[in-house]
Length: 284
Image (cartoon, rainbow, N blue to C red; front, side, top):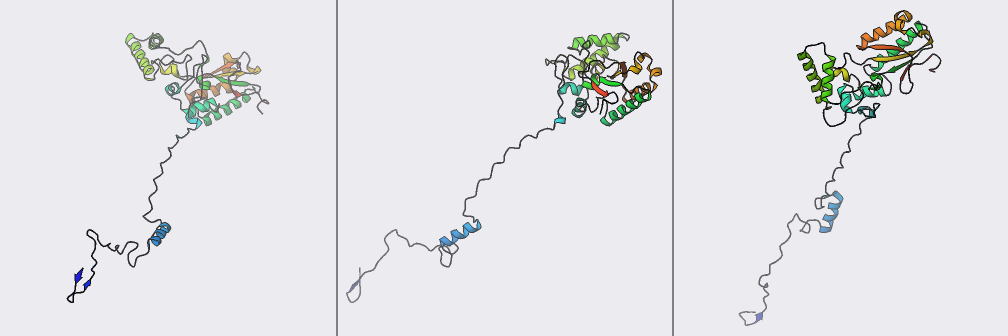
């Protein structure tokens, strides 16, 4: 209460202790004088994707699946007569790529030939047979070039280092002892580096060029052509006279491939042999 000079009293309201007058909002915030209302601000933020919306978490990227290799980048399944399945180890030792292995497996071209080279070889073989009057001939291909490994059960791949060393020494018995031991050591080093000395099983049958690379064979693997034709029956011992065009063909392709071509009478078992030429009238 306060008393005026004339003695009358009047009431003076004072703020309660501790109470403070609410300050006006800053002019740039919703609700301030001259600023848009809070409801209008929220509506504008929703329409424009404003900064008052909580950001969404970044999506976790899906793991990238491993690319599937095309079939020709892997080696085909090839087994020897014992059932051993050849792996990348043997193909690598033979310097055979997956593409070359598939060309062999699908009978597009034998190992050691390019497909276009093989096509030309077969075309010239047909021409030679026709020239020699052997239009009824049937020709089949056998050997490691045709199926990667030998089908001759009298031949076998070394099963350990001692066996390999002994075979190389016997193979070079006409040389000095020092040279024989040097060659045996070299063969064992190749055998070991390729992984054949480990506990993992080794193939039973020799495979393409393996015996040559180990120093057991004198030459790389050649091509075995079996020929069945009545016109040359009993005359393969003198093929140069009996079929001069065929003889020239074989010598020409020996020079081209650096491998021996063996021509023998008869095609043998027809189970897995590679048909090279069929008698006229049977290939259409």
